Amino acid sequence: MGQTKSILVLGRRDPTEAMRVAAGLTIFDHTPSVVFMVPVPDTPENAEMAELLEFSDIESKTTVPDQSLPHIGADALAAAFLAADEVINF
Image (cartoon, rainbow, N blue to C red; front, side):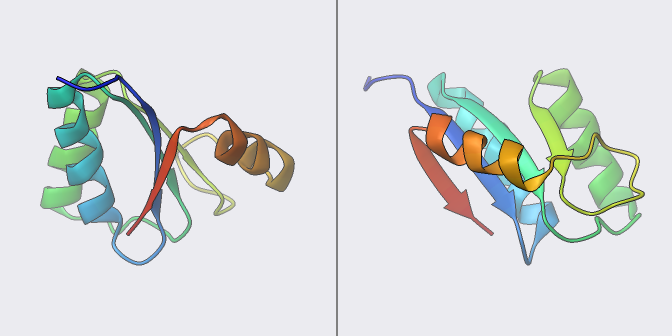
């Protein structure tokens, strides 16, 4: 198998798909993190995906104020981009 990578997954349009992909990346021993750039709808599917992220120890943050996740500002987001080996956008 290839090299383990740090992968930043951005949830810009489809936060559900971003969570699904991030969880799947752990199968290949990659270390994903997720940053949501839109509000995550409160649906049963998203609740299930959020639980999977938590179970998989995947760090999730948001650029959207007043959400239940930790907020990430512009400087920290820029640092996350630079620290990641790959960035995936959904």
